[in-house]
Length: 115
Image 1 (cartoon, helix red, strand yellow):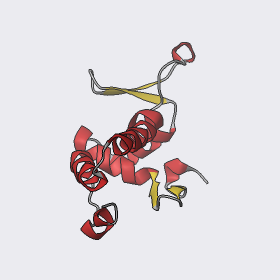
Image 2: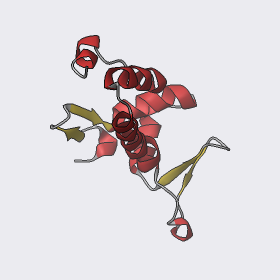
Image 3: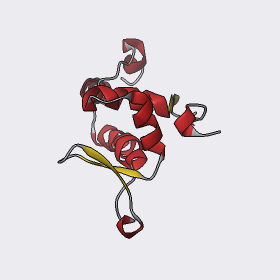
C-alpha cells in the first residue's frame, strides 16, 4: 500500500471526512497547471514546493527543516481549516467561505447541520 498509488485513504471518523492523495493532487494540479499523477507522487515523496518560484524540488539531507509537500499542501490546510472553524461563532458561514476558498464543494445539507 502506498498513498502515492492512491490505494490509501486518510480519514477522520469523528468528523466524517476522508480523502486520498489523488484528491489533493487533482485540486492542486488545476491551480499549479501541472499533471495530477506526477503531483500525486511528489506529494508523498521527499519534495517541497516553493511558492515564490512555483517549483517542486527534492529535499536534500541538509534541508531537513523544509516541509514536505504533504505537510504543505495537505496537513497544514486541514489544520488551518480546523483553526478557522474554532475561531468562528457561525460555523456554517465559515465552512461556506472556506470551501469556496479551497475550491471544494460541500452539500448545503451538510453545512446546515453545523448551524
